[in-house]
Amino acid sequence: MYSIKVRFNGTSTRIVDGKSWRRFYDAALFEGDSTKISARIAEAEWALALRARELFHAAGDHIEEKCDLEDALYGLNALRNVARHTSIANSVKAA
Image 1 (cartoon, rainbow, N blue to C red):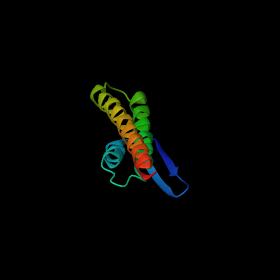
Image 2: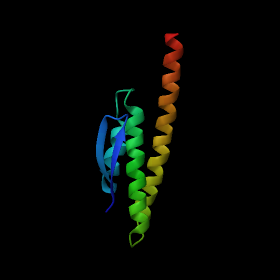
Image 3: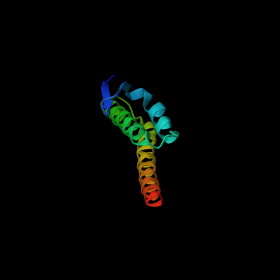
Image 4: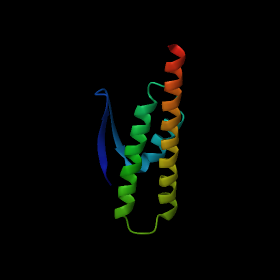
């Protein structure tokens, strides 16, 4: 099993293992603080990439989880786009 140390903005450090990717994905999806959403998305992407790497080297099919990983990446991309457009809209309103 792989694990990596992830540091965002020099303050938050987490040990991520591939099997916890769903927890990180859920944390990104349900983050209520708009200032933390980018970090949550990045954490989830790291965990997804780590799990994809584990599955690449694992024996067996794992097709269902690979499809879940792909769907999660699309979901994170959509979340990032929504967060970006929401941030832009809020900036325009404030001006």
